[in-house]
Image 1 (spheres, rainbow, N blue to C red):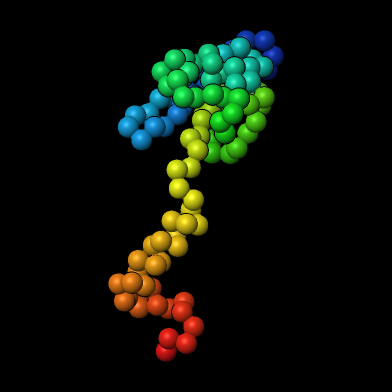
Image 2: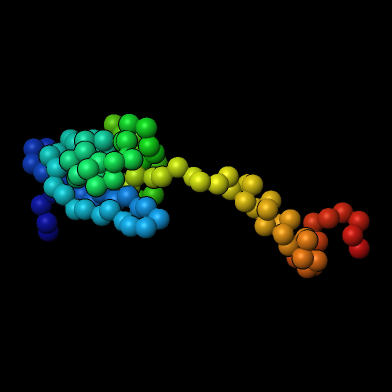
Amino acid sequence: MAPTDTGAGTVHITVCYARPDTVFLKEIDVPAGTTIAAAIVGSGLQQACPEVDPSTMRVGIFGKLKTPETVVREGDRVEVYRPLTADPKQARRKRVQKQRAGGTREGQKWLRGSS
């Protein structure tokens, strides 16, 4: 059985950030008790991607939103999320309007009295 880090020592984590053109992915060892914000700073992400500000951007571990003060554990994947560029509701409305304009049955099925 592999030993676990339960106090002093280090933990092995991965820090990732995805841009439209490239991905930052780095595995690092940090001291036990390190927060997400400190792990991001220690990974060098801010030097590689200057637009990243861990105090204002949303962060998470394995797809679950967390606060920057959350302490990382062994094997965690720290993720930094970019802000949305489009409102999902608006994007869906535009897709439906485009389908309706095309005259397909799929675009017409939600209109009342169209039978």
